[in-house]
Image 1 (cartoon, helix red, strand yellow):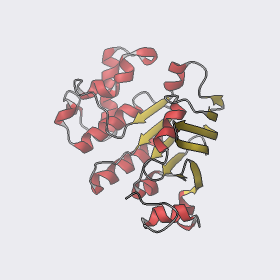
Image 2 (cartoon, helix red, strand yellow):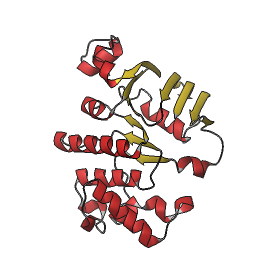
Image 3 (cartoon, rainbow, N blue to C red):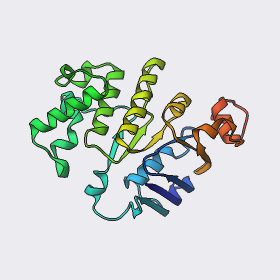
Length: 248
């Protein structure tokens, strides 16, 4: 579903992606791991077309991600943002139904609200949450609202940017399980960026280790612990010793 071929991206003298190659088969869940500043978010933004690569090719379902109808292209994606990114001034249901209330996916207001409440229930929130404002919700509930919004338009591809950041271990486990269940139910193709190894083990079919702008290792989650790759082994163990230099 997604293919990156020798993708390069620099910002001035900062060469972030330096020949990134990645394949995400349709209907699978890929988790990209790596330290801060290694290019994970830049890769995601390049796929979405929010950033234009300097060179290389990105294909989504066999077509160039940089060409064609942008609205139709983006309509295929759902996104769970790292910080939730909910609109403070809108009630929860309007946050969830945001894409259904405007643009090419627009639905009648009553229908959009019904879909929003259905998606809230799917992520474990009761219908009475629909009319609250985001500020009235806990961090875990806000993350669930963000997940409900990500799936509201039934996307083919879903991106999860650090889905458990700021959550306690129990709530992180709940969110990980929800993500896995929903991706499987929808048959969606998923790409997750995370530092959290518990998320990797819960969400991933396949794992890719990004360091210094290139994929150092990729394989199934079952192969991860015996990868034999020094970058992967250091990241899993959390050791200060290895090819990944700790920023002091």
